[in-house]
Image (cartoon, rainbow, N blue to C red; front, top):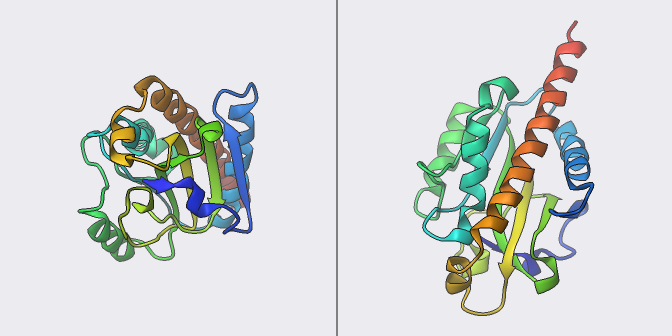
Amino acid sequence: MLNQDHTDNRLEWSARIPFDADDALARLSESLRRAFRDAFGRPIVVVCVGSDRATGDSFGPLIGTKLRLHREAINITVYGNLNEPVHAQNLESILADIETRFRNPFILAVDACLGRFNHIGHITLEKGPLQAGAGVGKQLTAFGDYCLMGVVNVSGFLEQVVLQSTRLGLVMQMADLVAEALEASLKELQFRHMTAYT
């Protein structure tokens, strides 16, 4: 869980998209396609951080659950889902496993975050690592080539309570959009790989 206010102006490239915009799927898919240019020829690992114990924090695990249904078709490895979440207690071991299993992986880190009231429902994709846990005062290892964050509620006070009271419908709609955009962009990346070697 990240506090979105901590990330303003810290990275050289980013995209912020309201989930309910008419062109949200097209814009997010295009942003992801741009990010995945850096993944060409590298194994892709998507790490979905969060927990199903708090509605707002379930953004990552919901996306991971959806992606795992199609992970072979889109040729990625997914860590984190509703049954096997990635959280503060196991993040270090997950990152160690990735380092052992993969050579030079492209890591996309996915997490919920808290932000300004007028940013609720926005999805942000940034080049650079995710600082998981910052929104609730935890110091965890930063990781990832890119990070994708969903602003699920407002920051600034009683963050744990805010996460518990976040609307599930909002989180699910945001997760649906992200999963669909990821699948579309990864299928295109896979097609480009295939045509590059034929």
